[in-house]
Length: 182
View 1 (tube, one colour):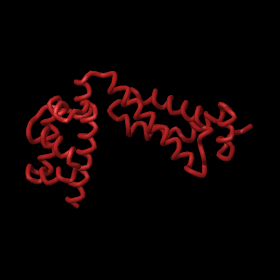
View 2 (tube, rainbow, N blue to C red):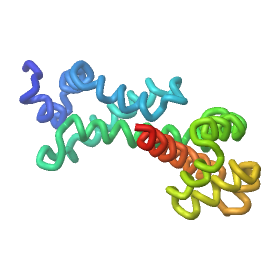
View 3 (tube, rainbow, N blue to C red):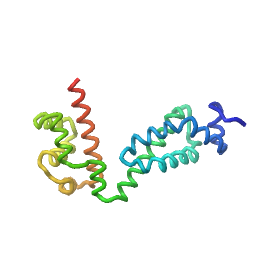
View 4 (cartoon, one colour):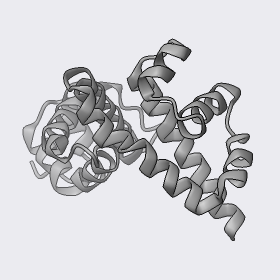
């Protein structure tokens, strides 16, 4: 039987390996795009994550409901959550120096970038766009000069959680700065 767009989902549910090859040939680009977006700092994990995403599709195809989502969106979701699993695994298995280098780099460099874009007064005003907790974290780290360890102790948060907060906060600030510039 020839696998095509009309029958590949049915054949995946029947555990026909040719249907999985069809998915690889026609949809792997979606998986690769999503995975590389999320694992851009961890490129050496991308292929392994892709394989896990394909296995996730194979093992969970019975949960796919075309009335709720398109196949493309469904597999993109699988790829996203597999990528997040790899990030969690990496953060759990790595030492803090590597985390610093990957996700926050040097605190001073990030401050310089933000100050260069905004200036200290505008940076202080921009930080007000963040939640109260995030404002306190940014102020302590970037303006008061506390280390990530000191902020973690002060806030009772894990350093990995702080890195996530800082990453999301910096992205939000950059978007606001770009929006104001236009």
